Image (cartoon, rainbow, N blue to C red):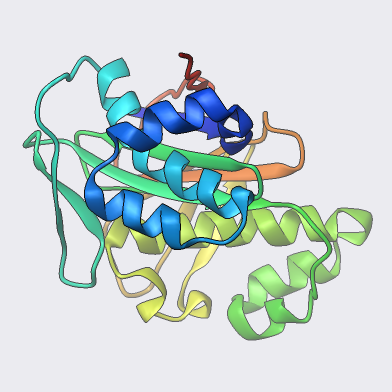
Length: 219
């Protein structure tokens, strides 16, 4: 099982919705939200707090949710046992992937970027691809970045490893990871249905994924 859910943070511009979900959040989340200055930041933090319970409910789980942390600080599920998740946010959206195996998820808003960053963080193969992409260079830059981050997040090590130490090879709307440090086969699945964003989900599972499922919240 591998599913991807997204939520538009701007739904919490509705004061009634904001207050309802804020009141239901745990004390740590409420304190974090209260310490933030802008409504945009508050909405983003609230969305990050509610998306996992909503996603698990869509997956058929309505029980207690307990989280822990892995070796490098990656959030994991203690309850329910046997399920994994990974969360990411960028721009107006928060995304979460839920699976029965290790999973990584990354969303990137496509915006003006300093493409020279690719020279430092991408493999030679990827740098050459970006430099020869012409008008599509920025989108390819974020496409690669999302795929790379999703892989490192699936491994549970985040940016504790160089992005240039492995490569992403695309085929249609999926990709394979070429990692000289690992014999495991990881698949990256891409979602481009959100205009102006790229989403990548990384898993060992070879599956046919549906489109990202948008979570709607209401009073």
